[in-house]
Structure formats: structure tokens, C-alpha cells
Image 1 (cartoon, rainbow, N blue to C red):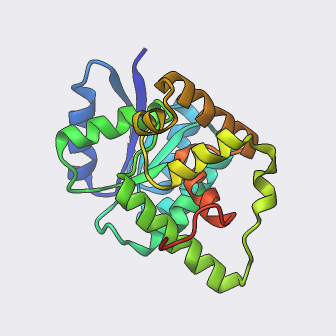
Image 2: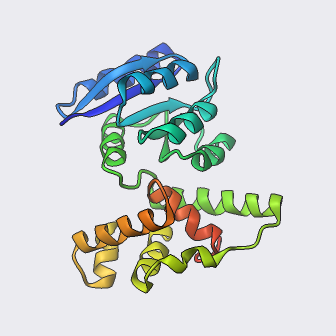
Length: 221
């Protein structure tokens, strides 16, 4: 079954370029394009895609507002498109439920790989980028709200699941976690799935955020 994708960007060349690259893949189908956030939201409602590539800065309805709506009402995975890797909106996009982000100058192969990875429910962001972004966003939120870590939220996890979450937050892949635990990758996938389910999280990116917010992993450590 093909991965169904909606591409939303107000720059026609970017939008059509990404669509052509993705549509050329045997396992990916671009079901719609959108030139603003409102069109993107409408396209998701009409076509029920697996992945939405969504520009952060767009007219009518910006990408951040569209991402919140899409993540709140569907299982579609949102990947934000941005020009700068430290775009301030990236932080809010992750909190809105986005599964990650791509730079607009992404290489062809990396774009295709990212769509496949996100559609499978795996992590999109490179480990180093994930740690930097999440640590920074949690630090900012705590500064703004003076909120203390809430480790009690993790009480629903078994000891092995909590350790899985800790290693996820440190950027380890399933294969690396399997090696650390001396188990199969299938077993690790089960642990990750249990962590997401018990904590009510959409994906691995939100799991990393949760690990920092609860104090399981300390920013900068």
C-alpha cells in the first residue's frame, strides 16, 4: 500500500518540486497539493493522507495553526518545512504535534526517506537535532512557566519501558537500544509502542519531549 502524502507550501516551485520527487516513488502517492494552511487542512480532511509536508510560514492560515488542527483531529503525521534549522516556530510545531521538520534544501533521497520513516511511525529528526531542539524547547517552557518536572507521569511504565524512554531521549535508534538491552529490535519496537500508548503520545519526538519534561533526562546532561 502506498504512503499517501499532501504537500503544502505557498511557493509553487517548492511544492511542485517536492511532489514530483515523491510521486516518482513506487510506494508514495501525492494525493493533493495546497498553497496555504487552510487548503492544507481541507486536503487532509478530504483525502486522509498518511503524511502532510507543511510549510511553517504560509498565508491565510499559517502552518503552525494548521498543524495543531491536523494533529488534533487526525492520525496524519505532520512534517514541517522550514528555511532555517533553528526557526523559532519549530519549537511550537513540535508541541503542536508535528513529528519533526525538514529544511527546504533537503536532498532528494533524504526527502523520500523522511516521508517513509514518518509514515512508519519512527523518528524523523536526526538524534543530534532532536536532542538540541527538545532540550531547548523544554528549557524555554520551564523558564516561562517555572514548572517543575513531573516524574509521577512515568509511574505507568515498567522499569524496562522507562529505560527505553531514557535511551530514546538520548537519540539512540531501535538497533542501538536492542544492542544495549541484548534483545531483538522487534522487542524494542514493542517497548517503544508500549511507552507511546501508556503515555498517550503520538510518536517518538513527543516521547523525547516527555522524557525532558518529566526530568527523566536533564537538558545539557
